[in-house]
Length: 138
Image (cartoon, rainbow, N blue to C red; front, side, top):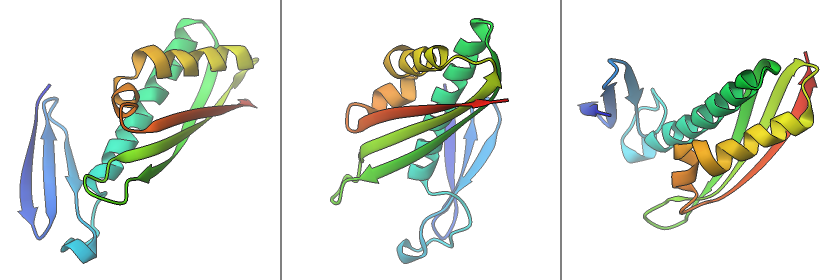
């Protein structure tokens, strides 16, 4: 995996991933940024949410469950002093589908958290990560 991050101007940066996609990042105004794009730590949190949601949808689909939607709401707390790592992350999943059993969703969440989601497992070394979910009828 590769990524190149280039300073654009002020405190904004453009990352180009090895797969050829680009994403912008910017700093807060009090740090010299112009608030034009997500902060790098916001992207880290979003990437973690994407990683675990991907796992959950894939696990449910492979189990032949009729999943039609998956949303994860993440709330994170950071340390007060540098390095301001994440110290707590809560992930709340809203999973929808036809005849979707809560046990299947619970299993998918657990497998992602304990085995498959490399992002959340890595962040789990500095942060306490909690999970909850709701099953919504499609």
